[in-house]
Length: 281
Image (tube, rainbow, N blue to C red; front, top):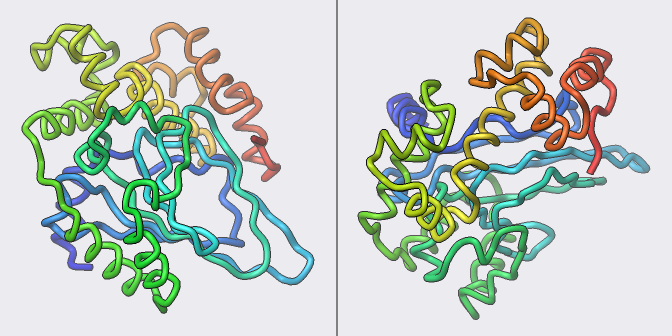
């Protein structure tokens, strides 16, 4: 992909680059590809996970989901996966791949035509939304030889159903970008002050467009980064990480981290250092 397109995508990112928990093993490959510019207002990126394990070996990866809806093609079936509130593990063996389209937070509402909160913690067959068109998409994705072919197929079908971008959708995107990138925002009240919106209106906006609360999105982005930095082992102590990410109450950080990851910050960092499997579903 051209460098300027990648650079532009990073500047406009509304989704964390983190989310894979623990020390990533070498038995699978994750590739992310930015979408074409005409789709970028609603779609963040395409992604492909592929693996080739020797006979008899079975592995798994644990993920802490983003506040995004994904269109997922797995084992020959296309599905719509809503925002997942909890970590989950995916087991795999043999040779395989999973392809996905990650929509921006709020980006799937125009396609759905209903509050995105209805999809939270849900995985639904794409046929429930696209009817027979889902089977056509499945056949074309199954025949795709590589990531470039997968992307071309997905983008062609997205353009055929393109709903346009409403002003409210664009506003949600601006708010989510601030939650992801701006470290001066540590509370929902900061968002309300910045964008001139009441807490109740902001809550309704996120319920309809994103599927989870603005507080949940802010916390999830900070925990993504905390887990990544602790796994890398280059971030100093967990207390320093907590302060840098806007947690001024250390006990609050420990509770949030442990609830989301399944281990305390200290235990998680140690598990990553020793390359143990640090989390489970």
